[in-house]
Image (cartoon, rainbow, N blue to C red; front, side):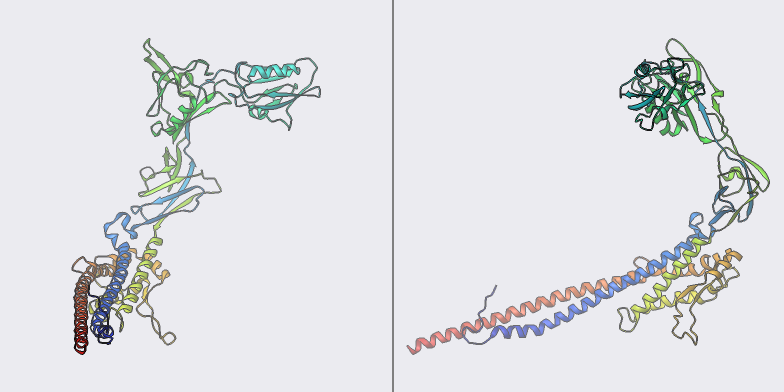
Length: 578
């Protein structure tokens, strides 16, 4: 690095001379940098314009993808409308015929329910915990001949403890063989009353304690020993018969009971198993297990005994086992199951039967339609109508999306190719825009439909007139009423002019696709040219800047040597004078 000391010998401001001389050459670098920024701006503008064409292509494809059929075909989509949605609703695929159907519903399908043939739980006794019966700790108020007494129920109290407290106040408590709790006066002639608004225990409400005609009280709900918390195989589980370890089957699912299985965990396992095809529920009030089918219709729930006697104890089966614990014979109590009903309905007067309230086309014979039955028809309802028609909402939205994307594209191209704009003079881009615009107004006689112009189906440009001379005649608009009418009168012709083989949007899509094509499309070719120009410009700037830097170094070196020479001459002159 050269260190210069401007004019130390000559007294001249050589540093300023260097900067002035260098700045002249630096102007060339600045000019090149300005050109580089211009190229980069053009590339950004080109990318923005490409985005407008990409958005247009996506909007067009929503309509032209009809050629792939199925869910891609917006022209083929249908809607199913019920005249009475309280009775039924429906959905329709593109396979459905567009017509009306008369529907009446005689009955809905219901679920089969299996209940324990009789109470599976043993009746509560003096050793039964009140907590296991669901009775909470707190107070219970009793009156004997009007004299108030308060029973204090603790968390760990048993039925025996409750009896003892009541007996101390002159009230006799007994549980009969059906699990009903009976309360009566110990002394003949005494009057008892049970319960107060100040009670904090739920005993009276939980068991439904009700006063009888003779003045005694009886529970509406029976008291049973077993609860959902019971471990099934424990000797004191509370069931009438001890349940053994092993397996059993509900539906197509096999379940295993071990020494840790509780009634609650087993019910959860049944309810979460899809193969069981059923829900289980334990009813504390009846001491019974109920199993409800997940499928509607008049079909039995498959319940089979295995190596456990669980289904026998619950009253669903009766079985015999050998000494090794294997089932030698087993029968299901069909009378323990209340069969569900099949749905009954009519379509155009023809009677139909379905095992489910969700009726598919193979049952109703209405191709492409699924009915959901919700309520049986009444005389007031009469006959309801199912109407299958073209789904115009998605189609209309897609056309509006295309029009928006098209208008955005036209506006963008006009903006970027205007005089003085970044892409002014890009004839390929202008030509592409004009081609697309011509498609929107030219007559298409090769599509085979009755509609030949987009304006025939409500897609038009604004028209300038005496009142609106500034109207944008390039901008497309949609007359929704005219469009929907054209769809109603001739949907195939609408599809043909838009997305047919020679349809307007099909031709547009091909033109746009060519411009966006990788490597050879207009945008990639133009981008490649700009990238090359930018790269060359960056190299030119680097080279020119290096030249300027070298020029500056040379000037500084020359002036430095001049100062040294002057300094040397001054020293020699001083010596001569001496």
